[in-house]
Amino acid sequence: MGSPAFRARLDTIVGNSNARVADPSSMSTVEILSHDSELQDVLIRAGRLREDGSFIDLGARLLRPGEAIVVGSAAGADLVLAEDTVSQRHLRLEHERTHVLASDLGSKNGTELLGLRVERADLQPGARVQLGRCVLDVLRPSEIVSESTGRPLRGLVGSSPPMLHLADRVRRFARLGEPVLVRGESGTGKELVARAVHDESDRRAGPFVALNAASLSRELAESELFGHRRGAFTGAMADRKGAFREATGGTLFIDEVAQLGLEVQAKLLRAVEEGKVRPLGADGAVPVDVRLVAATCEPIEQYVLDRRFRADLYQRIAVCVVRVPPLRERLSDLPALARYLGKSLGIDSSLLSSSALRALAACEHRGNVRELRSTLLHAALAAGVGNVIDETHVATAVRERSGQPARPSAWEAARTVEACRGNVSEAARRLGLPRSTLRDLLAAQKRPPTTSPFTVGETTGVKNQETPDEGGAFSSWGFPPYQSTMTYAMVPPAESAPTTQPTAATATFAEWMPRVSRS
Image 1 (cartoon, helix red, strand yellow):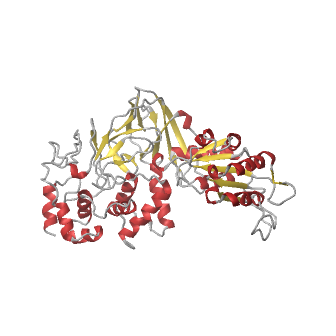
Image 2 (tube, rainbow, N blue to C red):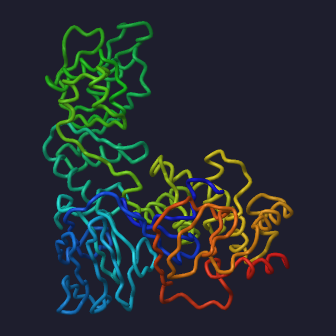
Image 3 (cartoon, rainbow, N blue to C red):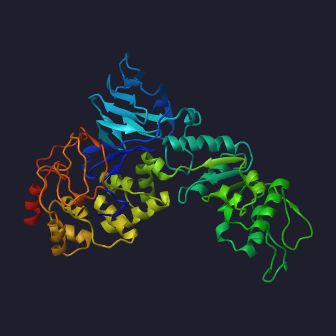
């Protein structure tokens, strides 16, 4: 079985959707899994994206549990989009109480999710689908932002609903001048959000000073924050301003603020409330004019209960709280993020294939954007300089970074051979395996299935067993056991050229094995 972070079941929907893709190479079927929580009213917002990423509102419609609407360009549609790229009856949306079921009505330009053309899929709040040049966002009513503020923040990549909601809060809080607490998981870009608060405020012309509290020793934290006079302690050979005085007239960003010691917390509270700091060794306090932005990925409320963080300081810095969404809640931003990060790594965007993007979306990315960057770098190294990056290189990168054994799964071996068009020697080089080992992996399948495990449009329950079940699915593809799984057909893009040879999604084991053995 392959890496848990690179599963054959690929999440393609933004937010908490449970839509899955059975084969990351062909995207031929989508599985809809059962949902547990009830979903209240949702707002279906339509619009177009400008080149700068800002949102042009084309209308919205509230969708209540049990209701269904039709989206199209016809006057009789429930949500009318007067666009020539939208069919008269383009898409049907039905609120099924736990999710919104989207069904394409045979439209000319199709319905896309994360660049994939689909017939049916379920959606949760935060999902975005594309209809021609238009997009539809599934939102909770509380997440709505206006057209005037619904544009991305400078320096942050992403125009998904969670990122537009973040941008709206940052702009509103930036004008207030009060302290801001940025919450978010590691690798989500909290410092970038803090800088956006500074850039959107009246202090944008002033300095932006960043300080990581986790990197400060307890002995030096006070000096780093408030400064010191020459001779204040051993080694103090000259005066030091400190971060507060350096940031006067601008913004001071303290990352990992929960790591500060209690003594320093008390002095930080005084500095925020009184606007004065007292450098070590100084006779009196010095006035400062600073906007404080703090950030943490820790459960700071629990720290307060455990008396590891002062309650009064928490109340003072958490006047305005901004939550940065993790990458898993804004997967529609992943293609743009991957291209942006690739450019920073010197990777031409033309070398990043659609299959690689889909494979990246399958990864868990617990380290969020920071981990995405590392995975992309390792995938580029696996592909080699100037070569196209595909899903096999992403799988290799994930396996290497997770510390798993270098031996790939039978599924990864089969996919690599398919990507190499049956050339075992080339596939073995990509995987870093001897040809004999690769052949052993390919021959490890007990017996060929009578039909492809990715037959389009059928209803199947994949069982975790060693031999193929009646539907043709077998355990070496690594599917975990589940129940009541429905699969829906996904159609290829209209511009795709027909192929005369079977693809990985349509070829049975018996069809492609002879091609492998002849290589």
